[in-house]
Length: 416
Image (cartoon, helix red, strand yellow):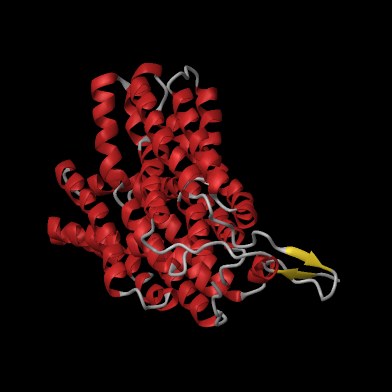
């Protein structure tokens, strides 16, 4: 029989970082760059690549879907590795490889290579974006919820910074040279920051040893899977992922069908990013002492309100659309924080990476299929009216699932 002994019992504990330490700031800036270069920039390369190669928009977006699927597959292994070894080398190496992939992207000339490259980029998402960063923060920062809020506040500027920057680079230098510039930025900031500034950090299960004295303890992930709260939280996040990904890729044709001009659509969509940041600021300054479970009960109602506003928007014109964008953005920003802090609050910080990875696997699969699902539903009736009502039902199910998870969750005392 075996007993798992924590690091604190066998070695000196790793140093703890403050929510606004240099490590947290560096990790936050790295998130802005990684999201900007390895995710948001993708959409800006579709038109110039379509023009050069003659590939269809569906073919080009297929690469992104494959990347999301690859990210889902790698989420659990990446989280488990970070639990055991910390995030320094995993996040550092993945950031450097991300820069190499951007450089290789600038050289591609056939669709097969493009798909293979995006499978690799998707795998690297599992070691560079929010989920691995959340795992690092929960294992190394005493006030991890405030640190997660701080980091996601910075991350909210990724599209604001990199969409216009990438457009400027493509416009002045061409899409291939723009990718090389993004590769240099990716290497210089998250590549170097993650290796240098994550020094001294540990994983939630780093240094554990096994001693032959007591009954074997279940792994944190196995214990989580036995809790109804895990499945409630998984369903809530999956419902949200379906909504987020579906609307992201269908927003323009959806609003066009409902009589919204392109200028109004762009203006409304532009409000979503600042609203996300605003939501995170509200939590950072006014809700630091509130539990993620209590916040989530309110925050997961916001997508429902957003969908009601979107369905009802045409009679109210542009003001109704603005109201939708504002509520939708607030909900997006807050749900990211509830997701990051809620996992640790409900299941504890030990094994956070693996538990979060299991949740990410499911939600990224949902993100990958959502655009196709919404397109299929549109094709049935050749309009978005029925799909919007179906997605409203999905958001209601997601809110109910989070309430179930919050109510059934065990009270865990976090030991830092």
